[in-house]
Length: 88
Image 1 (cartoon, rainbow, N blue to C red):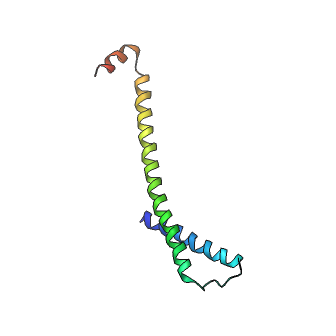
Image 2: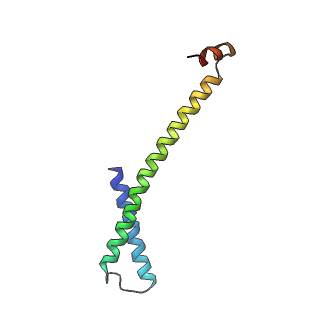
Image 3: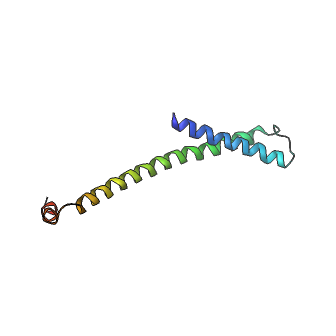
């Protein structure tokens, strides 16, 4: 369901942006509904991409945290244990 909320949210932003732009231009808001659909679909597609980009970034950050934790754990070993830890 999180993907749907991202797509729907970005799609709503696209629709609102289209309405706002037409309002500024003082053009009829519901004259060309195809433009609304195109804007909504384009922004919804961007929302779909943004969701998965966010998921990839979160996974990379978590992987980097684990890598840093392993490095810190190795650095905290006493000096005698460092030599043994490197041979495993």
